[in-house]
Image (cartoon, rainbow, N blue to C red; front, side, top):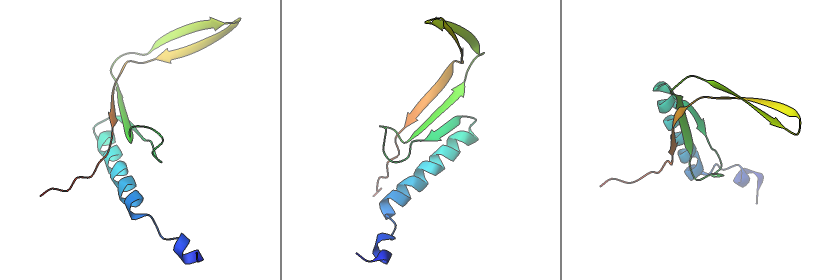
Length: 87
């Protein structure tokens, strides 16, 4: 395989990635915190969450070590992006 052939972009991946980026931006425009899961490593392509309440502090002690976590209730969406041809 020549060097030029290995640099040809995968059009399906490029189109899918562009769609995922558009979907992510749309959710961010609605006020959500959105993240793209690139590379098909999870069942969903985009995750979007929006805080819905006040943050609460939780202190957990494990083997003598205190861990502090902050929990915020959220509304979340897991989105799978698909392209369909319309007739």
